Length: 416
Image (cartoon, rainbow, N blue to C red):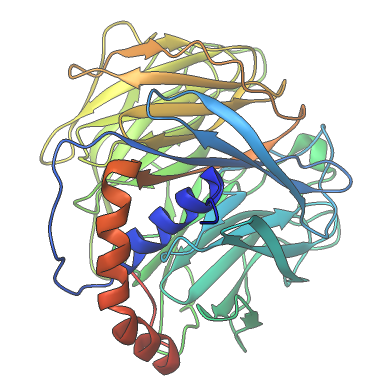
């Protein structure tokens, strides 16, 4: 009998889980099951590539795959952004920005590893952030001198992985384009809200937050431009209740320790109402943010301080800082972060990946990882799969629902 590789088993686990999440009734449910999975980042080197790390149930990471995107990264000296790497909602495709090549690459997760599907123009210059909702993919192009920043939309095929530009989906931002990538970004992130009906973009240089209503044909409305509560809004994230959290750098030349986080209530037409305004963490350059799946905690990564600051998020979106703002210390230059099965991961500018276990009170305990990526790596995506004790049951369930899956793919409906 042919033996199935560990990576093939993990891929089958993830495929089965994605099928079961399509909406059909599960055959059985498992509780209190440890999970493993994969963590992905992109090198952002001249020949850009995506690195896949196998995550064991104890949280440790092992590099198992490195696949070229077919595009050019921005190099070690690059703009900062959140969302350089994204995953489709059926968890079978990754989307990577190629900052140096003004393009987006699609990679498919298969039983034998990642496979590059194709590369398309980003619809602008210097793509820095991607967001996905159903079969819609939007990219934020930060722009260069003479080329304004914009957003551009694509439709996505769950069956082929092909991205197709959406006509009349490009919208220019209010911010002027930067003089050089090294000083950026003007705009660091684009993100769908939890409903998929709204798009938000942070404009760091102009202290603005842009909101777009998504039309039925996938095009965005004209921007609803709103002032950020605090200065220099950078990364954003939504709670499970669709409250918006925005990290604010809030620093001018020579100032330190001014970082903060603001929460907003989101109206159906995109209007933002502050809930907790500029709750400080006494750290410098809070540029990345992640929210736990239950919405109880948010973690802000302070790049200049080398510190992660934790916040408790109340049921109504109110924020309170955990302790003195130093929830965990990281290697120099912490960047993008991702949450997976009780663990928080962060890729640093120096190329290391740090990991922390999230405690019941929000405290972070180091996993003491030795995972390494190229210096300048950007973006972080984490995907959970069940342990081998439960994957067989999920595969049986996937087979029982295979007809429904094929029907949904033929109709072009988005997997959720």
